Amino acid sequence: MRVPQISVFLENRRGRLREACACLADVGINLVSLSLADTTDFGILRIIVEDTERAMSVLKQTKFTTNRTDVLAVEVDDRPGGLATLLAAVDEAELNVEYMYAFNEKRERRAILIFRFEDPDQAADALGQAGVNVLSRIELFETVKSGR
Amino acid sequence: MNLSFSGEEVLDYLPVDQMRKMQTERLQSVVRRVYERVPVYAQRMNEANVQPDRIKNLDDIARLPFTTKFDLRDHYPFGLFASPLTEIVRLHASSGTTGKPIIVAYTRQDIEIWSQVMLRTFRCAGVGAGDVVQNAYGYGLFTGGLGAHYGLEKLGATVIPISGGNTERQVMLMRDFGVTAFCATPSYFLFVLEKAHEMGINPQVLPVRVGVLGAEPWTNQMRQRIEEVGNLKAYDIYGLTEIIGPGVGSECEAQEGLHVFEDHFYPEIIDPDTGEPLPDGQEGELVITTLTKQGIPMIRYRTRDVTRLTRRACQCGRTLARIERISRRTDDMLIIRGVNLYPSQIESALLQVEGTMPHYVLVVDREGVMDTLTVQVEVTEEVFSDEVRRLEKLERDIAHKLETVIGLRIAVKLVEPRSIERSMGKAKRVIDKRK
Image 1 (cartoon, rainbow over the protein chains, first blue to last red):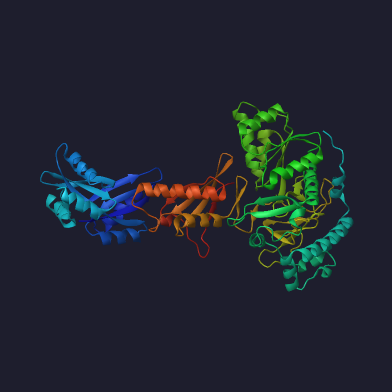
Image 2 (cartoon, one colour):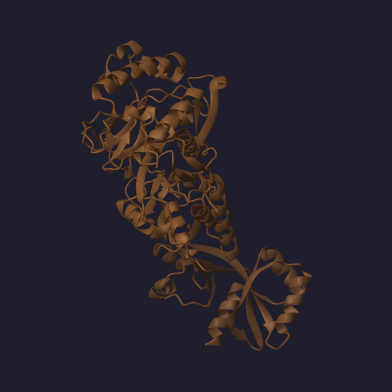
């Protein structure tokens, strides 16, 4: 159930974000999703790509500090209240959410959210039991392909 | 302003042959003292096969082994004392390279000598018994505050023992008490003068006519700035805790180098790599032997300060040797806002927070008149966390640890790995942007 996500440390300097994205583009890696967390001094770029190993290798060669984290891709009804219902299940299961962000593709009338839980396996179990659909990595990337 | 000659000052003008005779006798005496009372010195001297009776003249000093800051560290706290603790009436300390400070000790006679050399320091700078003197050097374990204090009292000046900090109050008292002389680090003094300006008090019309400034290196530009802003004369004084504190040397009105009170502190210049003594006029590392201290005498102490010696006649008439103003060191010690700091302290603090050794660089700069220090820490895979709050906590933990261990507020900035230069061998750890 885990989806690999790459985190990249970026100084708050002009051009750093562009360089990170450019080095991936140079080797033909497409970004499936992207999120940027920022503070005054630095930012953390979080991306999901199909070929995680290759992307990390290219980033490291370009001297970026990277990290691999496992996140969950969770489906939610694409209507008002959809997210609230999901979050109720999360609270109910007493899961710790570190951060989350939306995924750009969707399946039928279901939106997809990326969640970072402290314990992804425990979260996947608990959500599954609560009737929430947690996508596997393969399902997630199929969404991307079929969306085109 | 009372300019009468005090007894101690005569020594500044002693004919050279009399000085040499005094120094020779005193050297023989202190060498005997440490040989008999300090096991470390006895051992070293035996190993070098130079016992006290081998010292027949001043040139023989070159036979004696050196003493370094590592010796002080290795024998912390009291291992190098030549007097029993019952005879020690004062202890002082300064920061050392690792967590442990350097401890120095004073007998009653040492305190008297210290007061005398400080009196002579102030006389060099034209301060007299009629002056009202604000002493903003730190009082406490640091030698600056109490060192200046005892010298001023001996001189008969009116001392204001205000120590550092509370700058608005410093300005207020400076004005209200009719202060005529000020003691502080050069950067702090400039800060006070500019604060006065901010407060609507023109420092140029205040009666302060002289600043007696030391404890950190400062350039001629800095001196000019201080003299302009305050409409006064700014004199450089020199000292170090290991030798006595302030009182080792001072500029006179000629301001062409600092006279060393060589009847108490015998100066040599050596080649820092070979240890060979260098002739007058050549630049090298300053080595000092204390000729009269009882509590913790120092034989050929390597100061790590780079300078040159001259024994040419000075306009002021003093016959004491002069050293050039110190502008750099042989080691990597920094002085930030009057506090000694070694990059190795940063390293050991980082290790304590991290458990790994991240690459770092210290960037020293100056904002206005105050020194600032930023530690840039590379974010490598070991320390990188995917979560913002963990990285922010890391920054805070590092800053807190540094402040606790070193006593300075240091800004911490996380940076990317390749942004810190690597060089062959020793990584460039410090970027000093101050002018």
